Image (cartoon, helix red, strand yellow):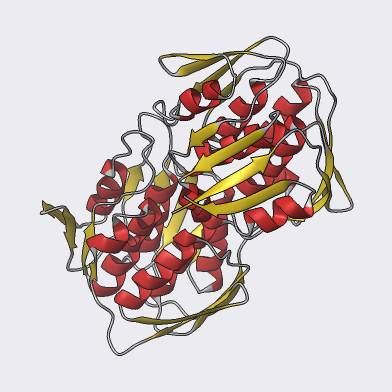
Length: 420
């Protein structure tokens, strides 16, 4: 196990290139199970999560080559119906193989998912949608066992207690593209990652209307073809670097990202006194020494993303005043508060709210990463803090940030990795 050492208090400068979207890549990889033909997926980030998904596809019978951010996925002798616990339990995103396996084989046995410890994230919406398509579901020994004779189109509502579900929308949509008849998904997730999956499925021959909207209309087809497809840039990685620039009072350029995917963040950073704008396809960040306090509430897209909540809270710890951070998507996603307070922040939690009284300065300290985005928040705090910060359990970062140290060092940050 390794730790990341950050010498903080140094402004960043230069430019950073954003990798392909992790959250788009995982369901897109799962969608290749829907066809027997070869698929090429480009702009795939080298991450712990994508390599786990490669292993899962191979265990299901696919042949996978992964070189230079490009995947070549072809069919082996026979597609298998069982997604093993050892792989699915380590990463929640791998649960999206359930829909395509069911559509292709009429049976799927998939382990209940794992991933970050950020509160209860049930799979009830996944099962609700698949049942509406005519699936019989059993839960045995930690596995979902799904069977059907023929998936049939249906009309369904996939809204949950905290809004729409990205993975549930992906799972049900991938099952519905090979179902008989028309499927209508109301309260579908509108995230860019779902729109990206929709575009790929259409390129494979699926018939889907309403992409990017909360109402998807899917007309089932008999088979899908192979595809050569490029994944969208990672908006969460881009947002993390934007917040990083603001926290270190830096001016940097971000290449390969799309500001239209980040308008909620751009708006709130404007309130905080940070200017973010697009100049000839390059995102520019201009920061000021004084950070204004502002409050956010996370919502499904196009609202403020829960995956940037921790990073934004790290920024608000240094604002001149009180900020309230409310997470209505994953209300338990505040494990990072204690670690930020170890660095001198003044945050208290009240239910779904984190209330931050800004401090003049953060100080380096040994801290423990608890999940992917909390880890990113600690990196941001460490870069802005006075002194040296040691971040333990950095394997979380490897799940979602490609070449993080190399990119940080390219911006002038002083970082190094050491054995625990």
